Image 1 (tube, rainbow, N blue to C red):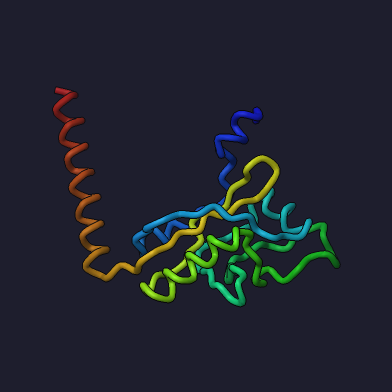
Image 2: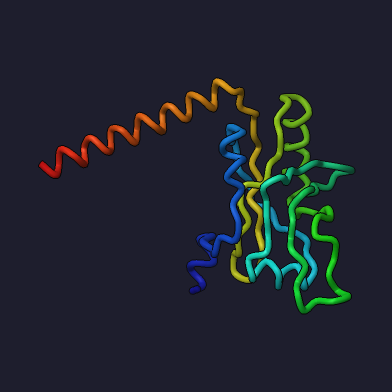
Length: 160
């Protein structure tokens, strides 16, 4: 990866929380660093991470991610940590305050969206989200289905 790629923010995606986009409207997305130990980074490089049931919270002016599962590194023996431990996210204090206010006043949720490498560092994209109701999910599924039908019809017409 060249220096220009690092500056642009392109990186290798490790994991994505697909259920978050299904269950929530993502209003804003923030890039946060994540505090890890060495064996966790090695496990992440092997793809041993799951974001499915994870969420973020702000406690005492610090942003924490809960429920993110990082598998123990197989050669890490005594240096492995608990796979589901709380991990601190690295954001500017002003960003944390702004997010805390929005979560408290507007009833929004902080959800990890994806985990990726940016250079040699691990970054977590955190979304400020509003929960979807069942009818919102049905609308989204109907829109996707109609879009598929339209694309299918266009493809059939182009074959003829």
